[in-house]
Amino acid sequence: MAKFAPEVYEAAAREREVVLTTTGRKTGKPRRVTIWISTDGEHLFVRSGEGLKRNWPQNLLANGAGELRLGARTVKVKAAHVTDPDKARATSLLVRKKYGTWVKPSKPGEPLTKGETAVFELTHAG
Image (cartoon, rainbow, N blue to C red; front, top):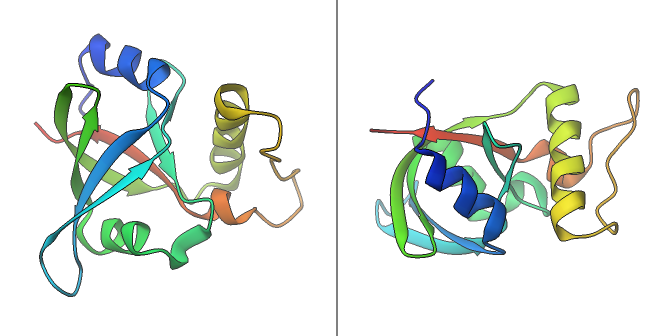
C-alpha cells in the first residue's frame, strides 16, 4: 500500500472539506464532489453519509481511483472499499472526533450505519 507524504496526512487532519474527483462510471467524465475526510495519521478515509447510493462511491467502486484536493495540494489516489465491519466502525470514531458527536457509530453485532457501509481507504496512486 503506497503511503502519502506526511504533509498529506497533516492536511487531511486540518482541512474540514476536500474535493474528490472520480471518473463517472457511465459517462467517463470527471465528477467532483466536496466531502469530509478523516485520518488516524497513517491512513486516509472518505465515506458517504448516505451510503453507497450516491454517485461518487459508486464511481469509486467501478473505477477504484480518483484525485483528491486538500487545500492547495492535489494527489492521485487509489480507493479501496472498506468491508471489514470493525474497521468501518473505527472510521466512525475518527469522523465523530473531527466533525462532532452527532456521528453515531454502530456497535458490534449491529448493522453498519449508512456511512459505515460506504467507507473507502485512500492510498497514494503514485
